[in-house]
Length: 184
Length: 171
Image (tube, rainbow over all chains, first blue to last red; front, side, top):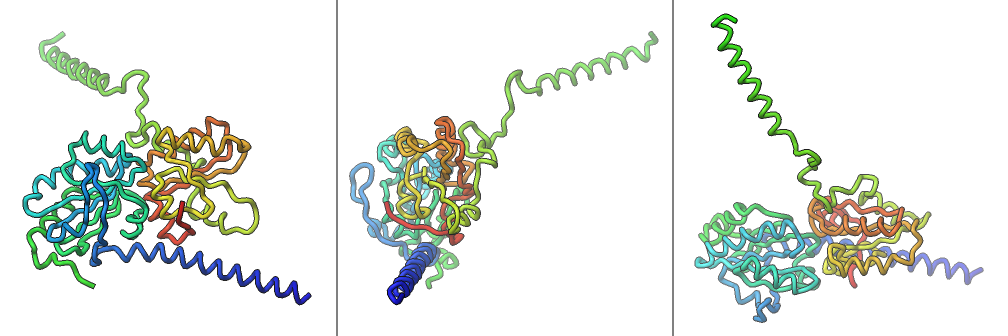
């Protein structure tokens, strides 16, 4: 009888701990989203681009960076890219840099897409770890607009109008004091 | 016929002829059904509401301690599955890809056709998802009769994770 009582208490304890862990994991996933958002520092990372070059995010400090998480099969992602190419061409000389992080499972369609659309900015295939570092990429597209010092000025989840991105780019390139990211 | 009414008759006839010609031009081509521009063939929006299950409903089933649980299959992109997926869900995609559909076929082919299965993706907005409709159509063609698709209108993050429904991470 004492043995069954001990077993029952042990079972309840295990269930309680398990429930807490699950709740913690869920809370952590949701909380992580807000650790990488407007006003926070964009996490550093290193990848290899489609043409085999090293892509070190830290080396872009001093530029306004638009970091785009996308995929070749993602319709709204594809819709944005011609506009991004145009903006890179228009503002590249003033210190703008687009970076594309593909969430495709295979590199071949990304290479084909890159060539077909003559993308004029570096593209690398990402991974789940990088996505987690950036707060979780749990739907596409996700676009970060980052100022010259590496602070996130805006985070867009879903397709964003080209005019919105351009307005943000302009304000950061112009170093308008009103556009300075509010530091935490 | 008097001289005053003849021009009027011609004018009226001309207007009527023009109106008939315009209506004939505007009529849809014979045999061409005018589908909603959003509900393209293969689109998630072609799935009937009877084939869908809402996140709150699935979350309730998962939470319940009575009754069986459906087989849940994520048929979207793998990096999403790795970051977060519904507890107990298996990866079997992407269904927009031939290799992904083979993975899905291999997973379900030995199951009874009345097996309760829930498919989900959440890669991007529902109206643009390239995976749910091919996956549903595949299972339907294999004879499965008890398949639902999780209706994620925006994406997995917005409609499941950030709503506080359970998730786990990993391969």
